[in-house]
Length: 288
Image: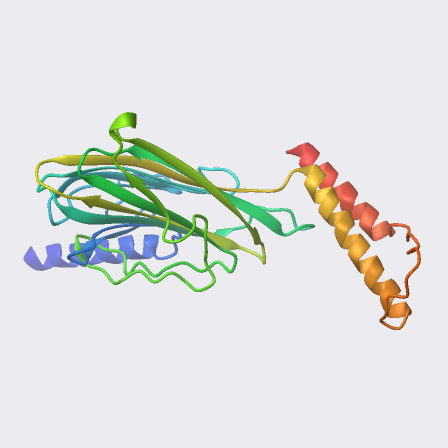
């Protein structure tokens, strides 16, 4: 009987591990001071939400973090390229540093005719006296993400998070810093945007550092959202025309021996290829 139970547990671990090994959506909570936490994959053992594209964790983290209800949401639940991270965290011993991270890869939303995209990040929440927080979001045009470590069945040691060198922060480093403000009753918010060039599939990831000081029970709640957007049709057309004009001028210069000879530059007609590209952009945006 005991041996049978052991085999059952082992089989369960294998099944759960294989079910989540290919999941790109990941969530991690850790006590930074103790380097202990949990790493949760989509539909892994600690994920309370059965839907793909959503991870929910509810449980304790060592060091006095007795209440942690954290959810991250991505594709296919959210359309386009979006990553949402929200959490409510309670510290009962009064002091501690909790880091919450979420990541997902293989986003492909964009317009092939023009690879320049924008990623918007926004965060809002509530602090109480004796708490502060720092938030950051990244986009990686090369689909790279930090290594959160192996998916866990329970709290344990976790490796340090290293941000890939190809990743672009949305807020200026180290990120948006939120401090308790009695005038706003602790409410805070911030947003930022950066452009990036799509080379294929890309990745999004976010991080929240929650700091509790003093004594007594304290609570922090927040919601952090990333959203990749395609420039409006008018902007796409302008950029396309500027690119076409630049190519035409380059050809004209090469034809003149590489030197600018002065005088009026003759206006070259748009090529049929450029016209078709513009038509495709307008038609694609009209269908959205």
